[in-house]
Image (cartoon, rainbow, N blue to C red):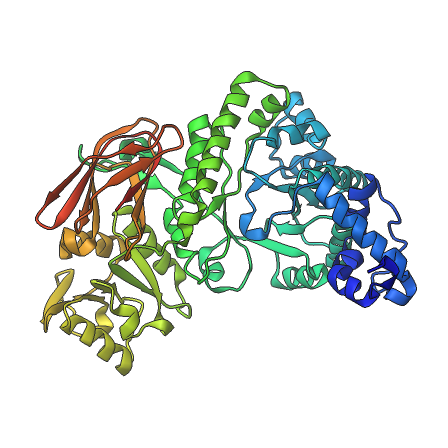
Length: 559
C-alpha cells in the first residue's frame, strides 16, 4: 500500500501518545537536538499535522529507535541507581549541610552529567538513572540543571537507559511535570517529606508519566496500588552485642540489620510489583555494596544503588580500587537479575502471619515480620480479609494476634484449623490467657491454641521455634548466627530455593539446611564462584544439605 494511502487515524492511534507527549525525545533520537520542540500542539489532530507528516514522523521514529537505541525496558525491569549531580545537587546539599567541603568531591558531583560518566554503565545491569531534577534554588541554577539533565537524558536514552528525575521538595507541581516532559524524562521520584496534596497534584500533572514516591514507612505501601513500590530501608549490617554496648552471653547471636523481611512483606500482591529499597551507605566497602544488593534481591526487591561521594569522585578519576569496587557491585547486580525468574516462585512458609491493613498500630505488625525472619522462621503473609479455610489449608501454624478480637466467623475458622492439627497463636482477646505465664496452650482436636497474655513480637518469634518441630517449620538452618535465610518454591515439580545472606564480613562455614521431605539433589549458586553440587543426607523423612562455606550470598536449589 502506498504511504499516502495509509489511514492517518490509524497511525495516530499507534503513535499518538508518542507524538503528543514525547516530541522532544523522539526528535532528539532522530537529530540529537531539540527539533520542532514546542511547535507541535499536544492536542493536534491529523487534519492539523497532515497525513504525510504523521506517517513520516512515525516511520522515522521506528527506524531511529531500531538504529540508534535499544528498546526502553518496562518498569518491572528497571534496575535503579541514584545518579545525582549537577549544580542543583551541589546547591541543595550545601543548603542541607550534607555535602563535604572536599573540592574533588564537589567538582565530581557538579560535573557528573558530563557524557563520560555514562561509560560506567556499559557493562552494568543498572538501567534506571535517578537524576537530580527539582529542588529550591536560584532560577539560574535550576535552568542550568535542566539544560544539563536534558542533554544527559538524550545521551542516556540512546544507550537504552531510563531516566527519572528526583524531586527533593514540594513546589509548583504543574511546572515540575511540564519541565520533566519537555526534557523527555521517563518519570519522577519523590524523595523527602511531602504532603499528600502535593503528591496527588504531581501525579495528576504528570499524566501518563510514572511518579515513584519513596515512602518512609512500609505499611501504607504494602496495600496501595502504586505500580512501583519504593520504601526506605536500613543499611544491611551485623554487630556483636558488645559492639553496641549491650552485655550478652558469649553465645549470644549478633544483631542483624536486614531488609529481607521488608522486601518479603511488600511483595505480597499478585502479581508482585517492582520493589525498590532505598538506603544510603557511608564509608562503604566493596563488601558493603555487594551485601546491599544481595539483601534487597534475596526476597525479590532491588536496592536503589547509592554510591557514596568519595567513591563517585574516585570513579570519575578512574581510580583502580574504585573501579574494582564498581565491578564487584556490578557482578552482584548481574547475579540478581539473572535470578529474576525465581521471583515467580511462591514464597515458602508453613507459618502464616495474619496482617490487618485497618489496624491502628502497623509498627507491631512490622515487628512480627522482622523478628520472625531474624529467628529463621519461614512464613507467608495473610491479610485478615482474605482469611478463609482454603487460605489456611497449607499452613501448619497461624499467628493470629492481629485478629483482635476475632469475629464469630474468624473464631470458628481458626478453631477448625486447630482441630484439624494446626497451631493457632492468639492474643488475650481469644480468652483463657494466663495470669503469670507467657501463654497457655490448649489442646483442641488434633491441634493446639496458644493464648498469650501479652503477645510481644520478640517472644512470639522465639517461641515459634519451640512450639513447632523442624518438620513443621519445613526449612531449618544451623550454624547461621550472622545469616538470614529466605525460601521460595517447593511446590509440585518445582525446586525449593533457599537464599542465604551473610551480614558479617568474614565467611560462615559448615552450614546445614534441614529440609522436610526427600530430595535427590542440591546446587549452590553464588556471584563469586561456579555452580557447586552440595552433598545430601537423608534421615527420618527429612534431608540435610551441607554448605561448606558462605562468603556473602548464595542461592541453594534443592530438588
